[in-house]
Length: 410
Ligand code: SAH
Image (cartoon, rainbow, N blue to C red; front, side, top):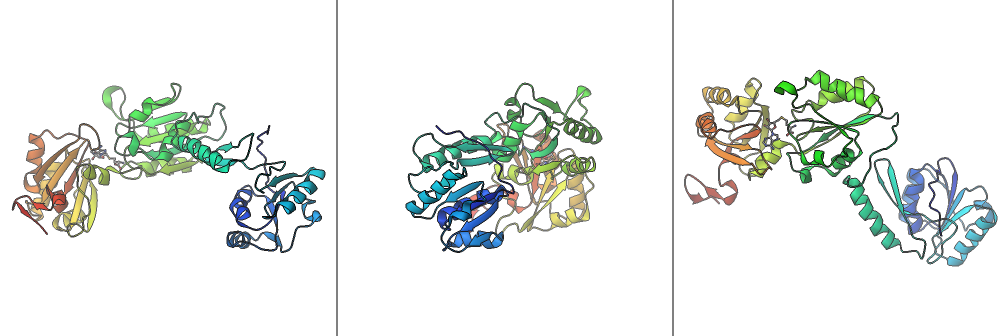
């Protein structure tokens, strides 16, 4: 039987005997823990030498002697010679120093586990019987995968002083278009502050005692003002809670994520941002529209439809090699169309309006700039929708078919 123990090696002497591949592979684990490392080896593998130089480690370039282990808390022996490893292990045993013996079939008084980390959780795998590193690694990887995806109960049960806020980009809707990091942070969250847009299914998976605050709507259907959202994030984090601010798409694309980060920083609350697939790119993509396309569009210009139509937007609209992507643009489409036509943008410029991208309700309306507002009205286009203006919005683009001419373009 073996007792699995978490030990801290920070500042403690660890002696690594042998400088081959095994030492090179394991050295980073001791380095990560801040051990005071001494390597004793007449020959070094390239990996070991690189680490040794990069971290300025102490190195004795000769065969091991008994006095090398004397000051150690832990010894790792991997000389490639089982007799030497056994001798080192025996020296350690008589001095009550723990020793990891990497020789085939040997155990030593200590063993490294197959280890994985997810956030602040450390999982180690080992076996009571014979050493089987591949089995341990496979098991470790399987558990690590579940942890990373937040599919195991990661939430802290004991409140700590270390509250924090994570702004998580939820992508355009489906759970499997969220990042794995975002899923894990959700699984760790005590509070989730959610929007109207963004993945909804993940909210249903939360523990029943996770507080979910929907700032997208409240009685009277008014969204919660930004100031108040900032305050909610800061106040909850200061209570020691882990707060996830879940947003549709990417937090830094028309998500006011910057303001929330600034509010946290100003309040001294630790904050991080997890990117998400922005609807700017992923919603057109859902309708088969690439925002750039070799030979058709060299770049794309993104605008908020509710804002004033700027000269740079008119420039982009006039340029037939640039795609213009409009978010929050349904209500303001008429205003955009008249500004564009007045500025001399060809009324024939292709337009695609993609509603509810990546959801079962997804619908694409194809039209042209001149009559986009009329066709949108007739089709009763509603938010959320992304409006794509430019040659890439032409139907059949990727089929190599020119719709009007009905001919294949080479
Ligand atoms: N941060 C988000 C954008 C927030 S602004 C992102 O990066 O995607 C909200 C606008 O995003 C909506 O008005 C709409 O234009 C667009 N949008 C978000 N999700 C959408 C979806 N699933 N389908 C269509 N448009 C969407």
